[in-house]
Image 1 (cartoon, rainbow, N blue to C red):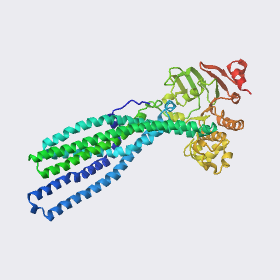
Image 2 (image 1 turned 180 degrees about the vertical axis):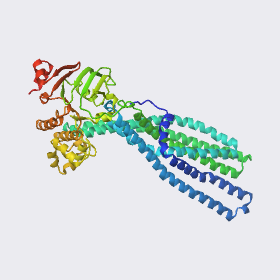
Image 3 (image 1 turned 90 degrees about the horizontal axis):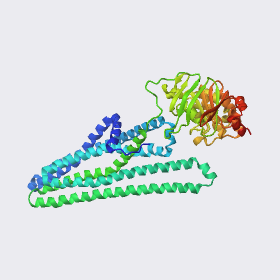
Image 4 (image 1 turned 45 degrees about the vertical axis):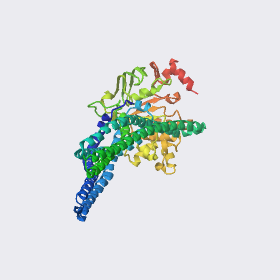
Length: 584
């Protein structure tokens, strides 16, 4: 994953387009933000007006004048309340919608990433990026434009009015601001780095918890609960250390800004008092000046306080962009066409393959022709590339060299969706989604009828045991199918493929993890499933593939032997040795 640091400007440029759908809401939000500044700007003017009027001519300060000013301010405050309600309600909803859009884009991109990405990335880290990393986006999306807009208005107006009152005093105050910004920025950068480390460590905790809880049966079988507690405690303590570091920088940042905040106040009081003593400004002007300085410093303080939230949001955006910038390795070429219904004729033409992070080939110069309806078995030592060869057909990985043809068509010239829709895969490690038995079978053909699903279950030899479950097809299988036996899960996965009804079938050691009785039942289901389909079987127990029309013996050097079971046994070669080893 690309984790190189990206500039704040770049991250904002990636984030700002998400406002496009909500630009009207954003404009109204900023307009309301402007209205909320009116009271803060007008109040010092009202105070100066009444003070000056009272000092010059106390009789001019009538009840009517005071009440008129009071009514004016109350009216402005009512407008302020209405505008603030819109900001707090609709503005926050806008932020939540942007967060939702970003999460949708992130999840969609994750669906497109290849096997190799997930081989190198922890799911717990991805869960953190798609959930908690984006939680701060709601506040960031709402408050970021709003806070800077309000602060901009208040600082600009305050600066203009302060300059109109006394330019030199104003310049003294604003001369301090760059120093404050310089000192704050140093802490600011460290805060961002600390926030990112904190998020990374949270992802590690999530990954550790997920790993431990999904493997809880292994943990308990080895009585290793204490080891898991120690592993978690180690990660938890590291997370605490990153939080301590974050809070240390936050404290330094806040303390620095508070110091300069107090410094500017005392400069105004001392310098302003000297100016008033020398007659440069009047007492009413000085009072109004203090109020505007208060408004100015409040605006600066809000920006400073928002900085923490800003850095949290930027960190979330940065981690969002890191995933979104991951290249989609397996993608349709421009002009890719949908693969029409195929018969299942597959050709490997001088195919070689190596994984992206390695220069050593897993497969080299594979030439292979699998005819329509042929049942081909792949055998050989572990690591010879049997599963890799099968994974190249549905383009889970792309070949490094050579070409794979299906019915004479280069698989890279067709859409991956249309290609994969015509290939069924039954794996050793069955994955059932949290839901009902019905849901898991229907996954093979979304929208299938009840009759179609039950027919697929019967063909897979699963209908009988499903009917005996507490709620039949509506029985919840638990997370990863934990409530079912290995054989039951495998038969449901076979029913899923029966429902899909693909012309090409890949069986990846589908019975190797089962007991003898379950294997026998599942093997019958697989034999039924393979009828009339082009089938590739990765075999663990060689006795199960005796009837294959062709057996390929794959080694690190390529296809060492091929032929029927009887032909290979007569050769007395590698297959004979392997079969003799497993024929027990």
